[in-house]
Image (cartoon, rainbow, N blue to C red; front, side, top):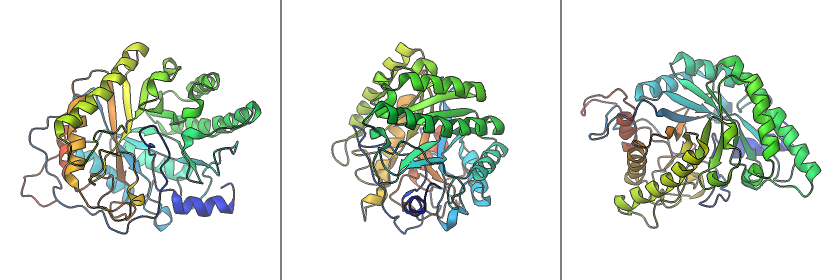
Length: 385
């Protein structure tokens, strides 16, 4: 860790994987978790009638989120997580996205601090163990290192007053990222994500990004991508340097709760059509590296919003289910979509980090949709989960 201050704040704030900002990518700040267990309930092992398995070309993915509670003892690399990975395999998941964090105290700090040996965090040892456990479970692995700004700001607004500071920052970032390229190569990772939602420098530092990717390819033999916010994809100038157009997909799909499903589907189609134009122009497939919907009435209005920030939320599984169903059906016949990764499934299913209104589909009707779309194991409708 960079300092005791960082360790304390990081322990309080950092929850797990990445999260997009608002519709124009503004920051979302996490708050203390809702104390309500997300235990496994019906529909359990059921499948959703009428949902056919996705084409084999689509990576059937899930963002697996490290649990920081209990000093990380049920997070990456734990026996609890090993059981969760087996559960995901049974669900039909074929790919998992794992996220180690680096962090900065503020947006204008020209240095990225590695996780180091922070007790509750995603240490290198935990990452190695988790990757091995995933592979043992028969899963492919995406390694997606991610930045966290300790003061709660959004990483896409990182910025400096002079070019020297920009260069100093990227030197630090490159060193941090290449460590994960080495780890990914050593552990047989399939895909490495070299950046996530770094809007302020996607065009400004094009040369540095291209150099980083060249260096990463010399160390890592797998595929490489970058995860841009959905609305930044058209303007990113160096998609030719990576293997996939990585997308954090959080556009607003509704203006009010209980929006008609035809409107939801229309808005998804509009956003996907725009990404299809980018895919065709750049000659690269699109990988939806992250997308998710909460079990709350406003989940499709503000898909990006953290459930921990909203206080008491009325649980609304129907809205989450409508989002899952609409997006899955929309990507099905788009041959340029290479995969989809849902936010999120915790390493510890008994976590209290989000509560029942959170993003996880586990034990909710949305799980049945995933189980059908991913070709998972289905029990009889009256079977106990």
